[in-house]
Image (cartoon, rainbow, N blue to C red):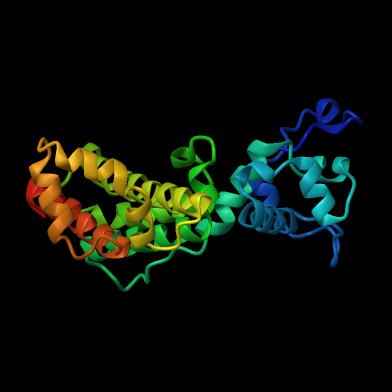
Length: 249
């Protein structure tokens, strides 16, 4: 929510200041407003994409927008509002057509899209409490998936648990993928082979101990070590298979 006005209007007229989302949906007061919530959101997302989530401060954002810091504060109260705007903006990219009715296809599509979204915007995994950011776009994504599960004999708790189980897999798996990608980049390893070569001394010692025969078997026979998309899709299908079997849907 934006900072209270210093002229005391809200206090004197007794009105509650509109929420961030109500203000976002209101038409701009002029045809070409100098600064809007949409511009702020777009600039914040660009800044985070370019330099990481930690770079998104009110001062840096104001510089990018070419305005004084206090101008931005007239629209958003601080970083919490910024994170919400950023999450809402990128989450609006997620969608499944209404004509798709199969619950599994809906949840699977959103999961695959969310992985791609997080890979494009790695800062999504750095935000405070990313899973409970309440924004219109994120609520629309949740609503679409819950609607696909609704009416299939599940009670409200089971329906929400199934939805959250998929979300937990998506976020956990993708954040691990991003962390590994970042680690490789920081060390200058451009491929899986370069990574394995760099880690060979430690791995050779551990495998040579004879204590990890199954892992050694994986290392010698696996053919998809450098295919995170396949690994994600396989794991996702395991989760969806489990939900279908457990809930009988």
